[in-house]
Length: 262
Image (cartoon, rainbow, N blue to C red; front, top):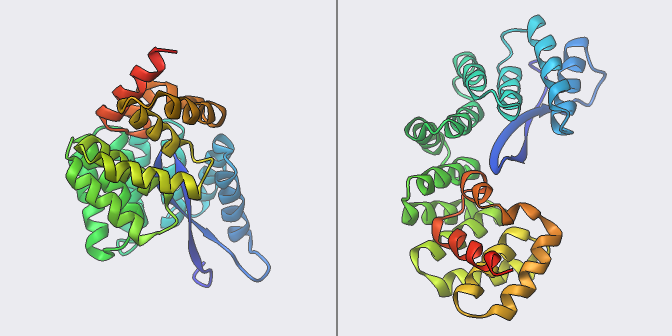
């Protein structure tokens, strides 16, 4: 598949950035290319069980395809097999050590197992090769947050948002880090700017709900929360906020206090 151009499709899965490599040929597909494309389409459309079967079928025929191994690893992670995901990313790196995406994807799988140091090392390697890689910067920031290094996390979220100005989740995460650090004015300003630009962005509205409540602005908090409940009910789940979305403790506790009074 040497003549096939590789490009990146960034999917936000379980609040991590997973890199999937796909192909866009401008000519008739060979049987190999057709199998790859079918597996990729199933992955992109969320048909993860079918996608895994298709990647398995493809890799039985072409076991040394690094891109396919990395993509199958992503699907294994989504299907709840992080160890299998790491094994596939290891093989992809061995076959194509110059490609950075498997390092990012391996880091994400390592995060899911709480292997913070290993994940951090993978992201640092990517950043050493590409200092503006927003996926690595964002995921590295999440690791720092999980280790309660919120100032470092805040700075990394800022760098990720600068590398990709349309990456709203990075800016919301930066505002949440500021909230945790006590930089309330900066946090409030960023959250309001995000809501002004993206009125249906649930994460920023939920964060502003907590912030308004902490300031005694119950009416404003109520207004934002009504919108959040219509957009995404998961923000009422404390475990999801901390373990999946990776909110800091302070805004999470403030939001739970607000909800408890409902």
